[in-house]
Image (cartoon, each protein chain N blue to C red):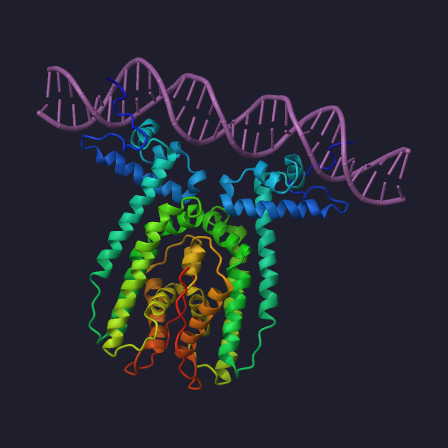
Length: 231
Length: 231
DNA sequence: GACGTTTTAGACAATGCTGTCTAATTTTAC
DNA sequence: GTAAAATTAGACAGCATTGTCTAAAACGTC
């Protein structure tokens, strides 16, 4: 009874035993190649080679290129999702040292959500294929940015109620916080480059400083801005 | 002497007479298709059909798909460039009504640079092919965002000297101004959607309000923020 | 109307990619 | 060690695409 492993239409390939290493290796390689070449430009051969796997094995696990693509996107999204969750659940709310806390938070969210390989993948693929696979990214849209915004908004609401901030619209402030945190990095990110530690640091400092100038209460001393990121 | 119109390696196709309509039509269609499908996904046939032109005509004007792609990118970039120039050269510096002036400017720069078809094209293509064609986009990087930033920085320096603003680092402030102007629109832009007039308006209001809270001098009354953009 | 140029439709070879198939080989569980 | 499951290399058909070529048609200008 050969070919019993052939994946049916929506099956997920070899089902029973513990050969997860191949799957993981395929997913990882596929993410790399899809990110580099786009969906149309990526060839299954290239992915198989980069995964140290035969092409047939790829087709054993994922019946079509598109199935593989969807699996990769879902994999990256779920990783990004749990990363985001762990980040939001550990945010310190000390209120004293608010500036340093916000800087640390901005650095962490940039490093772990926007400025890593997964963030690059999602940005690129959503921008390219988002219109072609509306429902595939729609869930991410709600669970990713949507949850960041509302969690940040809730945080700002608490800080506002506690008197550390003075904010009218919490969601607007949340979007602005994220936008300011990317202000110095956007150009590099557009070109696919990832920032260094010190670029992350100075971008976050500049962002938080301006954010607190706009929304902070009168506790904050005025310090000079850091130098711009050349990127 | 047939085939005298065949483009040599770097020639630009049929040279003498006034058949610019075909060229323009090809460039327009190619921009559309490259933007929609990416470089690898776009077929020359598709472009020819969308341009109402035979495939051979495309090859008469541009000897390869890549030649056409470079021409399209340069065309879009030059259009974006002169649009940017006309925008920066007409900025009003009244200093009274600073808020409304900045709002109008933010709307105009978003509408004419980031949130139109050319902006969408450049964002998409740079993100996808930027690493593959480094020098092609490098000039844009300097002449596009670079000039916006420094022109805005210079403007802010003037306003700062005149006492309307209080800014430490003008380039940082310029980047932040642009980032704030996009804060409410980034998600739509990522998904390839273009904002409506009223979304542009409210995004700009929110941005300028926060910007002036951070950098304005004490002339500004406090008004409530507008509702968030749902897009 | 004549002439040179441009455009067109279609055929064409070369190439690369997708997805299938097969038969041999390796891995894994027990 | 054995048997089932998974992997491999390779060949393969089908298809789309790129870029070339040709001969006919359309165009523009004088």
